[in-house]
Image 1 (cartoon, helix red, strand yellow):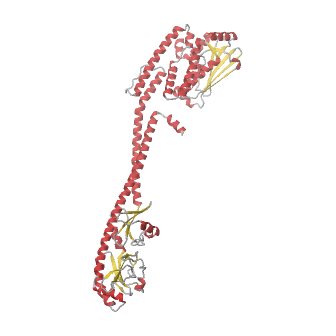
Image 2 (cartoon, helix red, strand yellow; image 1 turned 30 degrees about the horizontal axis):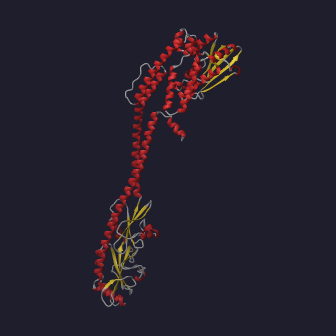
Image 3 (cartoon, rainbow, N blue to C red; image 1 turned 90 degrees about the vertical axis):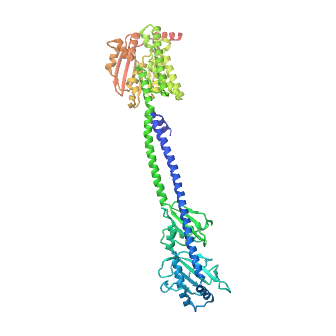
Amino acid sequence: MKRIKTYIANLKISSKIWLCMISIGLVLALFLGILSSWYFARLYQEDTYAQTADSLHIGSQSLTDSFNILLNNVINFASTTDFNNIVEDARSGSSTRFARNTALIQDPLANLTLTNPLLDTIVILGKNGEFYSLFTNTLKKEETASDLFGWDLSSVNGITWLPIRRSPFIKNNYIIPVIIPISQLKGTRYLHIADSAETSDVCIVLMLDSKSVAQRLALSDSSYAKRTLYLVDQNGRNISLDSSSSYYKLASSEETAQRVSREGGGEAIQLLYDNMDYSLYGKPLDFCGLKLVSILPKTLLHQRISMMNAFILLIAIAGLAVTTLLAFMLSRFVTKPFKQLISNVKAIENNNYNTPHQMKYQDEIGHLNMAINSMYNTIQQQFQRIKQSERAKYRSEIQLLSEQINPHFLYNTLECINMEILGGHKETASSMITSLGDFLRIGLSYGNEVIPISKELTHVKAYIDIMNRRFNRKIDFKYTLDQELENLYVLKSILQPLAENSIRHGFDVDVSFYENILMPAIEINVRRESDHIIMEVSDNGRGIDIEKANSALHPEHPESGRKQHVGLNNIYQRLSAYYGTVSITFESIPYFKNTVRLIIPQTNETNQNETVQNETAQ
């Protein structure tokens, strides 16, 4: 996590803006996608529930009306004298009028069958074993009425619907028996509906055609969903769904029966069961304790939700594409002034910022550019005053050269410290201030021309530390010093310019060329050979142009050469003026080892002691 945070923090501002916009767009698309998916799924479910409720309401009303009409017709039929004679014969156990009674009821039975499309046929069963039906109804071969109608009627309680079964007649279709037990009041000719089949004299069996019932229920479902409606009794058992239906096992299972029967009465639509594959809804009917149940498969619902999710995903992708384009345009709009600002700072660093650039807009970046221009002018004025003061203070050109301070280095270092402070990096800023203090303190050295070699090495280290901090580099610095030379005094500020050349020209720190160098390093070696002190400054940069370096030591036009190669020329002039005979040589193996070697005469102990005393006194 820390690496990811560091990586993102090191990205360019344009990349950060782009990443921020994309992240916001992605989170927003994800949030809206989830919310929309949840909302539309809920909306679809509510719509499905409303359509199911309508289907159940229409189906129950249609079935109730049809059954009431059929029941009224049956009551009218049962009120005739012919039917009354059948009940009396069944009650008395007489069978003498069986043939006559059968013939007399043919027309009423036929008319009753034709009056209701749900009715397949009617059968009258007497407790004396008599069987009355239409002549067109033929029993199955070699079967008797007692065998075919040996149904379990123990559950009959008033008008009772029995579960679907095969017809006892030869056409063998599925029928739904409706049992109406009839008995005669004692001492009268009045008939009434008995409490059970055992206490009845005859049972009117209305054989409803299961296909007609299913078609009537299907007409009530006008929606696109393929619902399956079926009837259950008060115990939740399937009544109307035959074995050809794909939901027959589900409707006939004991588990489903228990779920359906557990729900109470009332007229409201009830959600009986719900899972990922289907839902069960039920509505109590107004007769016989029946309930109309709807099986709603969720396949189509899942398809609609999947299509909706695909559409939302497509919208999210399109939104992300638009967000990406807007993020790119916004990042360019925001970072363009920053690029100009960086260009201005680099121009200041390279000392070619001749005409201050003015920003087009007066926003925060515009004010920052104005502050940089003002700071640049102030620093330039300060450096001009410093130069004038130095010229007046020092009496010789050597002293002037020894006290020169690179304005760009100081400005950029101060700017870097300022940015670190503004960024809240107090420790980094403190470290840079410490290094800058060491660098300036040793460079000034109270006006002394010679300093201990240890301070000169500290001067170099302070400079490299500052450059590492400024450019976020890791240039390794090390030195070797003979133990006998620890008290050696040398002319100040002769090694630091060489280290500066290594960084700027060997590693090209300003253009980040040195990033191709695996481990950039600078090494200083100070040793004694015979009566000379040899100081070597080596690096593993891109190499030294030895011809140009030698021409810098002995330019044809000293003034112009010194301006162009102030570092090497400054060192050579100062060493020559102080030590007399000196030698500077160069060796270069690019990207392996490039060395600038200074050879100066060995200073004697007396000069060192005198220098120490002078420095102490000051």
